[in-house]
Length: 127
View 1 (tube, rainbow, N blue to C red):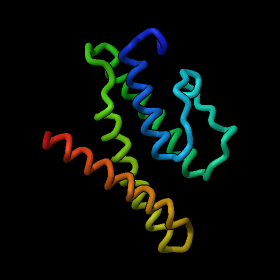
View 2: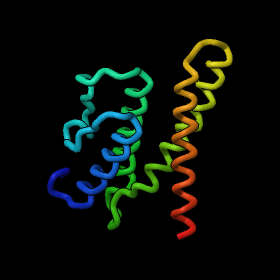
View 3: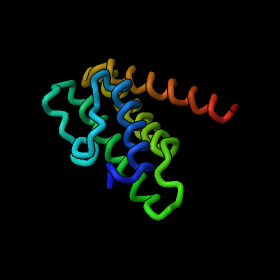
View 4: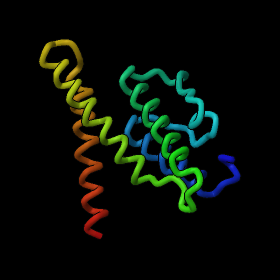
């Protein structure tokens, strides 16, 4: 289905390109990776792996939610869901950093993602 359906192929391609930019390593545009994970050969910080896992789960959820819709899954909806999670993650990481329990870098990374994507959303809405 992944390779045959042009809508899903384009959707996954856009997601993997965004994730590649965000996590700073190539996220393969491959059905096995997108559906099952499988980045373990590229060790990264555990929060990066968790983010990538969650982003892929949210992408699969968007497919399930729009399965019968003519338009198919929307990147905009996926980004909105990832932003919701990133805002919660940012709050948790800032709280942990204040208590000396976690890295400030993760909170900053979440903040950067939120700011960049929200700016992009405003530009899209203005167009």
